[in-house]
Length: 553
Image (cartoon, rainbow, N blue to C red; front, side, top):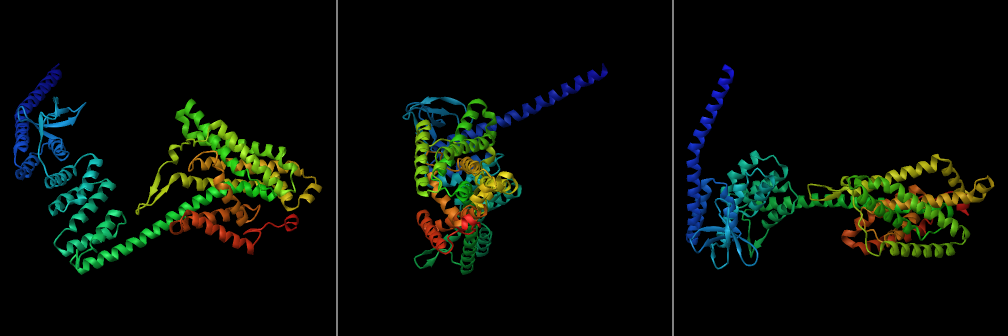
């Protein structure tokens, strides 16, 4: 019991101290509120030339409500109520009425018409000054987004008095994005200094960057007003010129990296689309004009699978592509086998008739899909793990979905090579490719190999459609956009050779993307086509020509 008494006495003592502290602090808080309220009233009645002084005194109170009042002043939302001269914040309400808010307490104090209040006068100079001051107030905000906005707001400031505050903020800042913005703001203000060494130091800071703001700041130093340089010091101008040249070299390097990345990703898409075509064309010599529609069927299969996930198990949507891959392969492969068994096998040895027949089948498939799903694009989503991008220091963006497509195409190429090199089916297929008659004489069922090969090529086109659905619109015309490029890849790389398809796809993808910046997309494609025609004149069998009696003949 004595212990219980000691606890009770201790708790009573704590309450007594807390009560005394509240009793002592309450008048201080009330006095601060009263002082801020009187300053707000003074802000409403002061002349325009005196308002900056009132603003400075409000900031000196250190009250957190000051930021909201200054935001209302800058946003022209600060009014004086005519009935009692009270300064209020007015927000638009229904009709033409304003919702009045007490600027000190934040409490709503009723509605008023526009004629019942009078806006507190400001001008551009006062608003600019207040914006800069607000920036300094929010540099220490616990919210990183507010600190970032404050640092970005200081980019237009020329107040050298902000430098100590910026240095203090930089020493405490831990967020990389805010820190970067603070460094840029610091350099921007130093460029306004009268001392050449300060401006030279700022140029040195900007020289290590590649963002557009830094380029603009450095470019301004090299401008002239008539015959007079804006930057009077020749050393600063020379440093700015060198920094800009170095910056441009680094940007050019990163642009080249970006074009190469896009070219490799385009090459990966072409590889997926052309791989199946290389197999069917190499084994059977069939010019399959419906190959693009196999890609389209794979993309629509992905759409159907994802719709099922959205309806039945939206929380498992991230697994939709894992289900769509085998489903797209099966759908396209079955359609390919049906085509081969139902039409193409009757036209072997007649390439023109085969071409016309497959073209007709492609039109039928397009119309069938258009009748079922409609002519408009269908939305296919990306799982969360495929979204986002890597951003380089130069602002170059490399998206994750293209990176996954590059890796996926390499995996598919490896899997197909394993099937062709290590499986009995691959051995039979290579035997048919080398010499069909000899393979038939050795007991290989060439008809079944043809059907299975056509199914394999069509199935690979189907999973290419899954990949394409992540970066392109899913529509009945999806396959048509890639069929010509796929044929170019096969012809350039060598008919029936997967390594040739790989080399051709990567070459065409990279060359296309490197030509686009200065030649344009259309002229770039024309130049590539002309180059391939000239190349085929010299090497009719492409980069990697197959060998065999049938091929030789």
